[in-house]
Image (cartoon, rainbow, N blue to C red):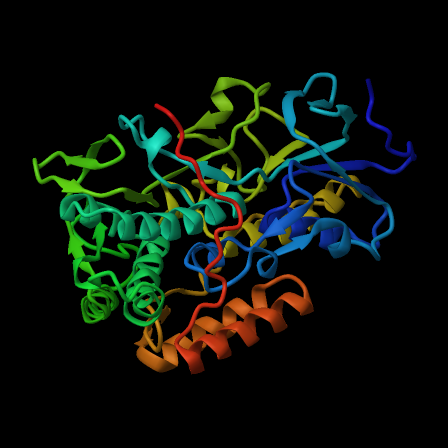
Length: 427
């Protein structure tokens, strides 16, 4: 059964996924002689860099999510369909979805990534990932539920396990989440749980490598560790998790830890759609040429985290899986699709690295742009300003800004609500 989409004589560009890359591509195609069809399993775009603030009660979910239809409400020749793509049929030029079949002239895969548990025993069932709004809300509920449980037990070992938070993965998400949990411990939880001895609460950042924020300069890595220690976090380096049973964390070195809260931020993998040849997939990403064309196909493209390009000398293992890459992919691919239609030469993708940053709690951040590196309060303000600019929707920008100001003045997190209790999966 075909999905009900108006049939027109214009070339149809089907975009799968409304992440940063998909949005930029659709925006840049507006006003041109093409029909754009966007498919996503959610009817909203998620600003993933701020998911950790949803999980730690700093922001409500609707502050970082924005309706897809509202983003494109003024776009002509644009159609959104809520559904999930199951299979690509490249020879017949259609995608099979949960709502039916959609034909395409040009297909763009912008499905992003999902959590990679690397097959480690117990992780997928019992740890807490944080890649979606639902997962962030589940994590918020688990944090608050375990604090409530800690009040009810007289067993100190059980209480300590309930109040021990192990964040596995020393990238930006892990570092930012660790800082946010430390601030909860310092400023918020003592007011909510005066009966608990919060000196027993531990926030531990666990990293399998020999340092955190490994894509940043050494001085910023050292500065971020210094900030985390000032906040009271423990940092375990060269520590690889090999098993988790819901309470006991086992590591390769034999160092163990009891925690009812293992938060997994240590890896991602591309969301692959069936139907394309095995030669077009490598390391859970679609292999693309310098024009974002998927290997072996003239009219199938991939952008963002799921695209693997190795044509640039400094990115022989592919570009970093971050929002700026996806946005630049989308912007250039829109131009190249129009060039293809007009039978003009294509432009090669070249990534412009605008720098990287991570916030480590109140008044603390690390930022680097080229050879310029700075941190502290100025870095923190820079981090906030950039994220506000990148948020989709004026309302979301205003709401997030007001929440940040309120939290800054009052040292408070207002959204400490267990609206949807979280029940851990059974292994």
